[in-house]
Length: 317
Image (cartoon, rainbow, N blue to C red; front, side, top):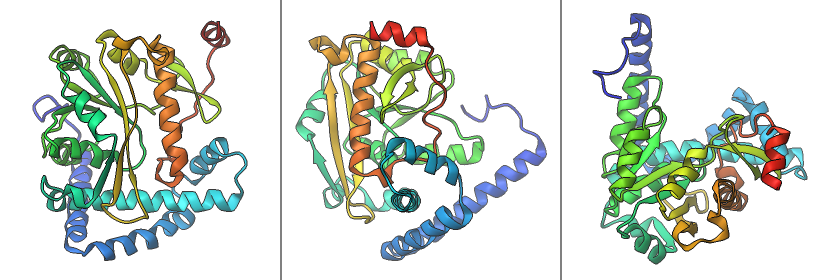
């Protein structure tokens, strides 16, 4: 949504937005001025503060970890919670440094791609494509890299409440060719992208409420948005599930991995219907998260509500 179509916000809100924007820009400038080893030490130091002193959404994080890993000790949960905050801080640092670090001639220094041939071959198909990831690893950097590689991806993303910050983040996301479609009201644009055999980027681990498609995620029912499966199945678009996982806790040291690929045109069991494809990609995201639990956003309330009994019965039939 551009400035001409955004609703006018109250003066007090605009002032708060401007102050927040200024603070973020100053923080980004400071981060960009520091050497990367100093940034890594900063992330490790402040992750403990955020996890155990400020206790931001600590109950949500601990509850989610107990659901996902019921056999873990309290210490294991605390360690992963601290690791999650370190990962999130490193993500911010990488986003700040990425335009100066990641280029067509330098990406091989920082990235190993697993399944590159399969990914490139699919992205070059003269058919619509759906690229799926989750709030895991550095998904922002992964989308940025697709642009560096020369692939134009149209990603659906929720707008930030602060329009100044939203414009700033969108500028980063689109700086290498990615295009951002607002989550609200983007269906017509998505239809055009798929009709023109474009590549659509989506996050597949957002809670969709009681009207979503219910799947198994870490052994408990969780809802996902039906639109993801509908987009892939209705347009017969190959669905690529990928992840960008940090190695060794270092900045710009990643595995970009194709977790799985399903093509509705081939008629496999994973694309038999909406629930099958939703469960397929959810299982792949869970598999990736289990490899590196601290790199998942446990701050989200991923398990909310329960499916209606009638829905469960029909799905099981």
